[in-house]
Image (tube, rainbow, N blue to C red; front, side, top):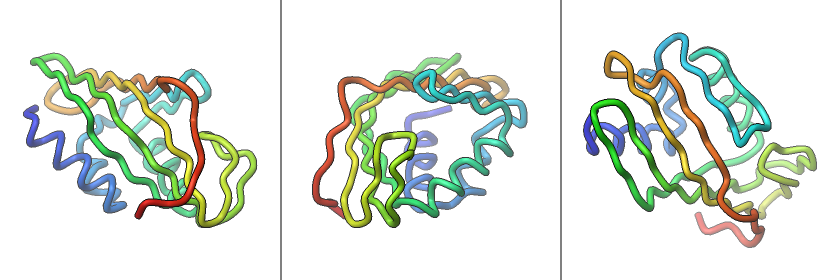
Length: 133
């Protein structure tokens, strides 16, 4: 997987192109979200993100990337712009029209050209404020 491939993945994610970014996942991929939740398949991950997309618009901004043949490490800024109020949202209380901003470090393990394991960890505290997009 190349840097350009990963940028295609991010662009598809930001466009809510579930099939587009979903093709980067193995069927048996696991995703650990800061230890709060573990998703154990491509279908479960896509279902989770479809549910998130009904609550907010999510935008990923790549800050840093390091990659080799076995994996990718990234630092990402994420903005979750609230479409509905959701006090129990996984990133923090979501308010319609406001955004939650987090920075994460994420490790992607690659097997057979696709992600087999994703470990996402938040760096620092979430902050809230006006939406930027």
